[in-house]
Length: 192
Image (cartoon, rainbow, N blue to C red; front, side, top):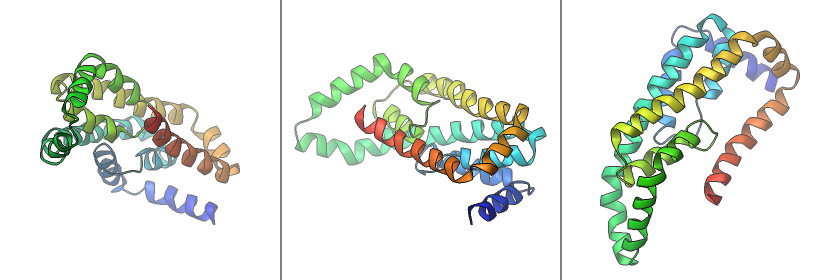
């Protein structure tokens, strides 16, 4: 069953409209969607390794644009939804400390978490909620998201056939590792 699903995803990722879906997933993942774009980027780059750089660029641009939406969600909706709760629970001082801390260390948070499996949408929304400098946020997002996607694309472009063979022989384990990585990202975020 997994092999047929894998074959179907590879076939779909070679279609002409696949980069549009990759862009949609990359955009949505940066602001509200839980599935990372790697689930499409990897099979697409394996199906057409000569387009790996283009696909990384699609992911990067769409993810950074989605990050801007996530920032807006944190910036605009946080005030509407969370401020009354902060006031009701007398957490205004605690949130002020969070904003001060984020102002000091926010760039490092964005740079580190932008390349890890920790959900990027958390970083984008937190940056907006803390009113982190938008220009710095966008620049750091371009660097980290670009580094992540271009690294994946480069590895798949240059080592595509051995990676494809590895995935095809150990598909169940690879999918388990991806699932553990996604869940692990949420757990690390919860503990951080």
